[in-house]
Image (cartoon, rainbow, N blue to C red; front, side, top):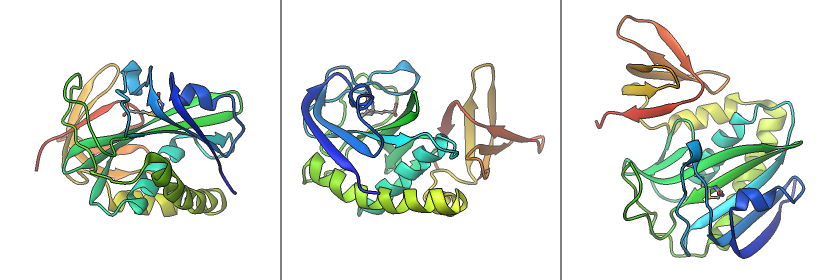
Length: 223
Ligand code: BTN
């Protein structure tokens, strides 16, 4: 499937603009005035970084798989040792350099990707951040990224999630290490043991109980 690229100088949020376009369109913008992150957070969006929203059709494939697809595609496009932090973050040297926000609109899934190509926030974020020191333009990066996305989407739709899951796991941040999950109604600490075939994080608590986490904030202890 071939993607169409729509480029804007400035928008409120590419995720919002993308709602106006059909599946297999990617909307990018130089700046966002109301960039949004997960959990209602603000995504600072100055010139020079990547703000892209990919419009996928709603299919039998669970939307969460698209987030793993984007993460794996970013890893395959960058020649840097980036790691994927469950469920939606991209890290370089243990610091966040990108994030993914999935939203649904009618019969479409909008997968928004923010990537700190050349700068990162100096304040206003609660976690360590960094940037990729990428020298090309966001449009150039998007075109390269689309090649991976096309290939991975074809695989996901024809062969299902197992193939992507394996690649995602090979780049997973903190796998088999200590983790704290902050869930809507409780906190759990234990070991990040695995990823289920549905994309849930498997956390084993000290009493040897297995917990499947499907949403929430995850904190890793530094190695
Ligand atoms: C996160 O909180 O980690 C997710 C951040 C997602 C930011 C991207 S930038 C492009 C798209 N448009 C938005 O308003 N948000 C996403």
